[in-house]
Image: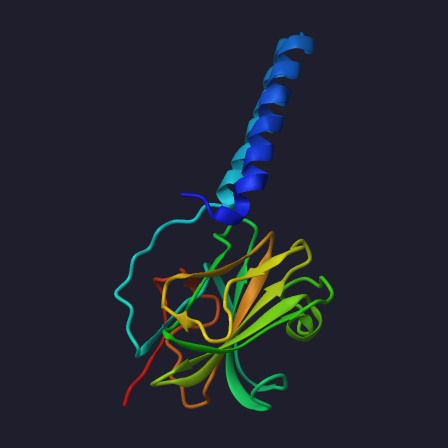
Length: 218
């Protein structure tokens, strides 16, 4: 399955691939060169297809869990000051996505969307310390009955040129459903209450809708 955000790009890539295959076959007569060019064009198409893949990962959504919103590597787990919405300290968990990761953003938890804001900005590399404050980004806050308000932030990377965010204030976020998409290299930060017990470690591989970030213990 492919994500709907890639429909136009995939269609355009297929058309370009067919045209290039025809031109290479007709006008390149050196056998080894023709083979190499055909393989390069095919590889480029496969790269586009893998980037927009959207594997279906069904879950039994629960109110007391926070799942990884994206695929990637856990690069930050630390206490930080969050100045945009909470204006106090939060526990931040950052997941970095390389271009080969699935780039679908999924709702990490159930709850009401109470804040959703887009910010234009720079395109620093996604792991840069200032990326969460200066890069193009969206900030979304979901109010969960157990955890309270939890923020996630989609952050564009050096190659990302468009962030897609589906969350609107007043929506009900259903854990596991598509929440957006970031095109070409990026990261997502989760801002959790300080009392949250984080269940992942630095450098862990996170899988969206699969990896348990936190579980509420009453």
